[in-house]
Length: 372
Image 1 (cartoon, rainbow, N blue to C red):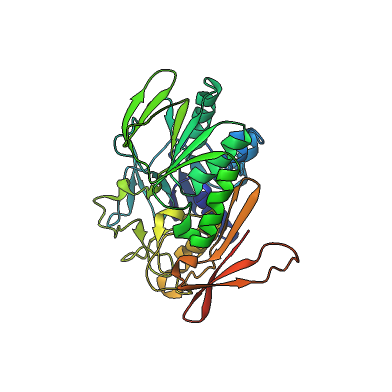
Image 2 (image 1 turned 120 degrees about the horizontal axis):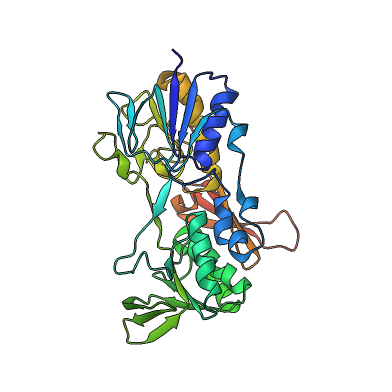
């Protein structure tokens, strides 16, 4: 009988893992199980080009499932796994596996007190989320509240200004993304959003929500009130691991893996993408997660290869993380792990007359770069 590899998650990481298995000559069964109703799509476009209408829904799709030799099961979330039996549990079926790739990604963090489920209180994580936001925007031309000063919140605010919508952005930090990009770039980015017309409410908390059919009322802790067309909640994400509870796999802000992407304690299970927490030995022995597009691509390919090779014959996965964000026409490009740095240095830009590149340094070594 042929072997069967099951991939839990039909997003970008699941798609690239399936492709890599076939590239390497695996000729057994590949079964890809996805909770969403369709094939993987370009998720970064959700808060940018898709939201503004610059691209269509069809433009965001990454592949035709028929192009990858696998059994694709959409709208089929994995509900549990039994590692000892090597079986994944579906709603009404048990599916044995010889190898399992966990690529279920993350899900939006819920904000305590927010009326999640109301049509005018939305998150931006899936195609359906962005379509719901577009629907709410179309039915009320009023201002929009964005809660969250991370990348998604800042990108949504930028896109809404591009659409000539009034935007109020709520954040907990003193400056936008300062904890990720450093205080200097954080201050610069905060000034950019202000100059482009985003009204910032940093350090402001919401005391009461007053949802209505046509709008949402917000009452601030200081007594002020605001009525908006809709609210975008972008307060971060959490690994999608609820289906792994009870499986006796190591869970700690994601699925804990060794350097080769193998889940700790298992030789038949690997994890990849946003859901995986592993030590990138190029930088640091402490396990971390990387919630970025390119890591989902590269880690899923490495995980698929290492699953076939086994833990003893696998190299450590040690990428240089790279990601980018576009806000108000400025592309922020990041490489390495700037958060590990204890100091910064300005490096000359390779293009004369443009902004310098910020280098992030720890113990005399360059550990990160940020260019604008």
